[in-house]
Image 1 (tube, rainbow, N blue to C red):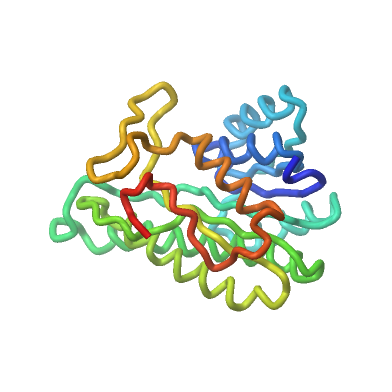
Image 2: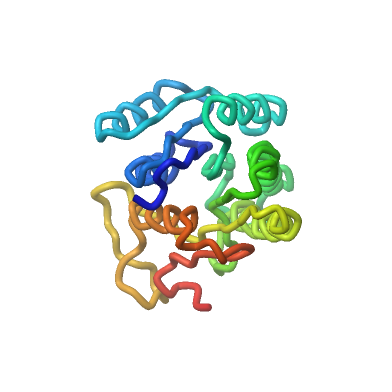
Length: 240
């Protein structure tokens, strides 16, 4: 198993992406700590992980609250041998469907502020423990290289997060900590239409499991020389 003996925190662990990533981390041997604003949906994910033989813990957490994130990271690190992986999949409270020229500035900026806040809060809380061990991986859903209209502040938020990730990678690399982000065009609901967007080179969008498997790879020692980098899961919609 690629993550055997690792301890992973998944913020936003009850969302579609966060839950898929948490299950994949557990499947590969990691003890997973799920956080979110509401406990019942986290418990549902944890029960599924435990039912499959994995280890999962649940905690209510507002990822914009730096003190709360620090306390949670302290507790996770103290309960085990530290923190190996931190994945942020929290929602950004965005408002989509209108062009920027028709939107209030506050509606555009809100998801940018939340995305940067939650990423800085959760990543730095985990990184403080990773620094002591000289290793760790920080992962974020980001990107921002697409050209898609009417995304409101979402696209701007994802672009901002790539800057946050690059700076974290530059500052934490000497301590052995890697940082990467996953670029995905979005995934269908389970059982939904999986056809790729016009302009993609492959015929299907990534599934949630595809995103989760990429996260497992990025978090594992198989990617030990990869940092300050993007995992492009767009099926060729955004070429490199």
